[in-house]
Length: 108
Image 1 (tube, one colour):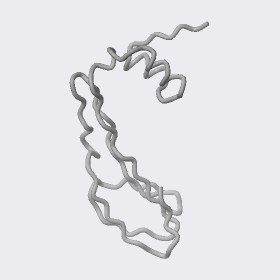
Image 2 (cartoon, helix red, strand yellow; image 1 turned 90 degrees about the horizontal axis):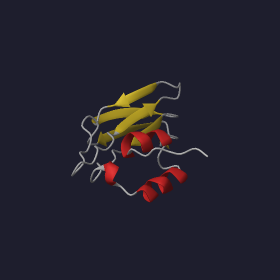
Image 3 (cartoon, rainbow, N blue to C red; image 1 turned 120 degrees about the vertical axis):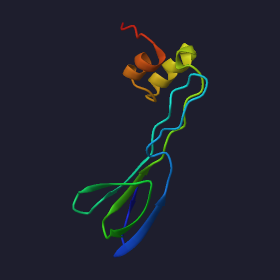
Image 4 (tube, rainbow, N blue to C red; image 1 turned 135 degrees about the vertical axis):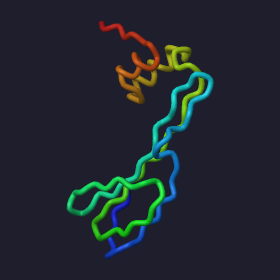
């Protein structure tokens, strides 16, 4: 995110994949779509189209979330140790481990 410290600025955005997610290959799931928004100094949030020019005012914050790449291969074929490591490092949630990878966690 970037906050405008000056009086006024023009922002031009030329992005892709805001509506259609990047696809996966060989059974991989699609990636995430991108998103861009302006948070006005009064707290209003304006979601931007992927291609636009907008005037920003002092105190406005521009935030961009780039699209994520699609997966490669069936996630249920991924090795269990890698999934558990991702869980331990908080890269995925327990819900996603179950939903995407079919991992059932044993509680001790």
